[in-house]
Length: 270
Length: 183
Image (cartoon, rainbow over all chains, first blue to last red; front, side, top):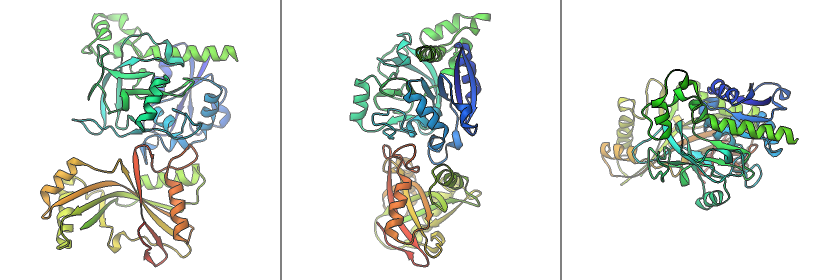
């Protein structure tokens, strides 16, 4: 079985549902706390930095957690090619630690800034639709369909120099983008819920094994978590389902299945 | 006329203490103390009636707890002694103002413009960090504060992400010297 660490900082609040989704995806998931001895965080085949509010988002979301020693373990795992996923606050940690997009090793190159959209300010919570794009890493295996996932954040706007984002797009480092339910361009709020450049919902490093993802796949790992009112194919599946069918996979489980598969491949290869 | 309005927490500020813990404990930096607050910069037409303008701004900010919650916050003017730093001999305190983008806020600008007796030309807000360090030389203190502030890598910089925020060094304070000059 593939062992995956779910990293928890003080203020992280999504570690249990993340671990549950990883177990449903076939992994042995263990929650590793920030203050565990270094040995406790080593030796996993993959790492997921879970969502929440590490250090209560003080100073800037993710930045204090990014300074923690456990990030050195995660950086070493990333350098070794192991899959690393940061979800929401975990994505903020990866960006602030320079693990994504990592064009120049270890440099902080982009920001996850406060949401800036017309007609809304501050924290936003709702469902969005994502379109998988060309990717070199573990998200390459996602089905080529629109992926609905929930978001809940106040600082989720991927931003930086436009030329850099164009380069990331060209090089397949924007694996998921906000779109309409039908897969069309998400021009404005709430389709693009935070004003991210190029509608980026996720960024990865060049190798594709480290992904910072703002939406929460673990909150959509089972079909019963999908709202009946959701438009598109997943909403239709939810409306048609009843009884035990509701315990079937939701759209977000695919993200964890891809991660666990990549971790298993890495373990076998090494 | 420029007026700078500082809003801080009453009592112990958890953000300042968490920030200090990160700087000292996680990054091993010689920062001795951190203060933090929200700083508003008002650029108003004309130079007269400074005290009256301050009164209008404070009243508008406190109204219904809109920008100052008087149960939780205290306010001061950056050009008055209540906002001055107390610095021991051989040490310094550097004021850094970090804004999201340029710190513009159209909603706050429209609100205050409607409340003030003088034309509001520009309004910006951001976070003020005051960092104490064992450095007597203002230039060294300024350079150290910038090193502490700008996030460049996992090991370097904490307070601002240069890809979405802007930073201004407002002052370096020395022992009993008051303001050492603006940069």
